[in-house]
Image (tube, rainbow, N blue to C red; front, side):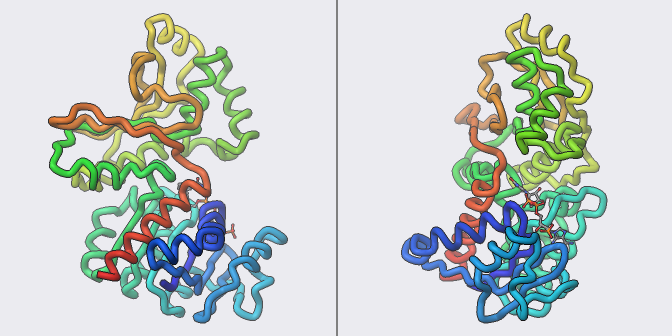
Length: 337
Ligand SMILES: NC(=O)c1ccc[n+]([C@@H]2O[C@H](COP(=O)([O-])OP(=O)(O)OC[C@H]3O[C@@H](n4cnc5c(N)ncnc54)[C@H](OP(=O)(O)O)[C@@H]3O)[C@@H](O)[C@H]2O)c1
């Protein structure tokens, strides 16, 4: 299976490392022999139909942040669209940064890959949050698979669990703690009375929060994941623009203490019932969504099985790369039929 990796950051590199460390298991267990024929970052592309030396690519990126050591197969300035058009492959893995105004550069990468007849695995939430129904349609039209397990729940198989394991059940509503940074901040405020600014600074130091935390604490990351989950599981046709979004920036220590006095805790919750919305909510301490730290949790209110909650690490390079591997195995299985 020939693969082009568009985006060689935390997720892209973790995937490459897994391909190296798990090669025997993938080959013996699933007949999967991934050959990386393209790696694209923000500065250029390494392209070789014969396969790229993964270790050399990882070392080059580690040493100086570029893929230049892969010369002569490295060419500065060649972007994802050009790379996808130029080199034959079966699968394009898109893991460039999430961008929520136009969904670029991810949206162009996905569209090009599908039009070129490549299967697509995407961990980038931007294109899906903005244009998921159109992308699914484009994938159908071009008869390619479009997988995006890593966009929700990191390595926790939220989407496939609900889609495959809850077949035959009615899912009446979905609610979840879908952003680890916000949950870490709220958990710490509740545990020791810390101020939001202090916890945020600490989260940034620990690498849980970005330098610009708006995307996380403003509720936008949760909103992206809710859109993807609702569209995939409930068949809705939402874009992030359809959601009411309120983040946690207005939550004070007083609010947290008042909730605590009632036996409750404040959580940032993405909820899809009749409408989809993101907002801080008070839930009882005993509620299954009351997970602490950077954990994520998602609850499906089902008929007839009742409430089913899945808890796991919602992010992380290795975790997310493991979901990419799952998607790859599914593509391989479908191919091999
Ligand atoms: N990290 C996680 O735990 C996680 C979990 C789930 C989903 N995601 C999503 O997965 C995606 C990747 O995350 P990440 O953590 O790997 O991000 P990252 O570390 O910032 O890596 C992004 C990669 O994309 C490359 N890139 C940026 N602009 C590009 C362009 N115009 N063309 C080609 N490549 C470009 C960057 O190039 P340079 O290397 O040159 O900067 C970098 O290699 C994001 O959308 C993120 O939201 C991440």
